[in-house]
Length: 154
Image (cartoon, rainbow, N blue to C red):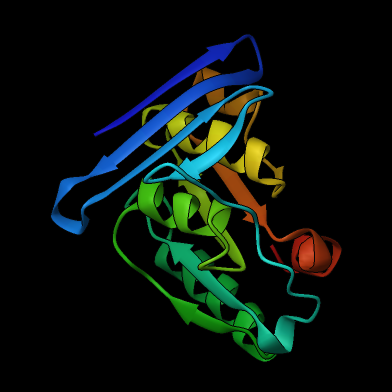
């Protein structure tokens, strides 16, 4: 379950529950982000060669574009994963379990809760709002220390 509330382009609230994992992420604008009640923060990673990046996949994106993105990230030295859930991948980036999450097309209903988590956890998010409010759009969420390098690859 993933619920998010935006005030225009500002993520205000987010709750993401993963019952099979016994995990609940929550965030409130100005109130921080938590996992099962404990504060979470984006990773402190400073080099792509030590980064784990989740790359989301969408049937709305040409396979060649997705494969090219994966190839660029791997060439940077980053380790890639795909967990199958954009919402959970973004939450893992907010919690510092991942150093970044990139997807070439994601919908607002898949990431609204995570946008609040990411903002409150100190992650750098680019490439979604405000375009994503009108329909699917690319997203990049990353640890601050690798944001500029990762942005050049995505």
